[in-house]
Length: 304
Image (tube, rainbow, N blue to C red; front, side, top):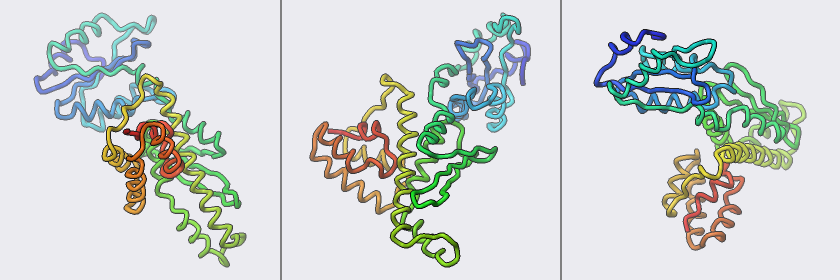
């Protein structure tokens, strides 16, 4: 529901509802209220933050994004700001409506300006192109393409259904890089020898597969660093407090199999003997370029 009068909006209030107000301090006409059941409030708040982050640079209209979120959650009570088209200022009726919300139900406020300060998907794609990747975008996916040292036209896809913001893009690239098996990739081309023209010798294939893995790890680390840098020094993530915290954080944030997890566990146990800069230097030497950790993340993994 949109642009209802104040009385009709008020009639829809309930003790079991929460108002989520999404607004911009810089653009006062960008203001809306979604009234949701209390049990859905946390999930919808998170969805709004994820979808609205960098929405302008991703070519979306804030009203359209909010409608999509409301529709996906089965919410009918979405009200967009009534504003003067000449001044872009909200009407008195809208200001009165918003001022009275807190008297009727809990209000969650989301500042679009704060969300917009984060790095966006286009920034990450620019970073990929700086590293030599060609990125082709369609309605359904992003295709990352780059020639390997041996001349393979290598590519991988990131599905649009899984990506709504830069965090999602970083996660998907990391996941692919972590899951890429150089040995299996080389084996695929070895088996194609004799059936596909131009396939090089075994030694070249193995070396080339390792190079592709390095390309992917470099890309994963670069986009993660780009996102970290956009957050600023004041928003630096809190570090871990123990070996167990570091290990759990890695397992929760990276898709690694049992063998890789055991190796990382061994690295962390060895690092537990070290202090401060020595521990950081060791973890950097052992983990940089392996599972897509950024320098900032390695530093935050240090606990002694």
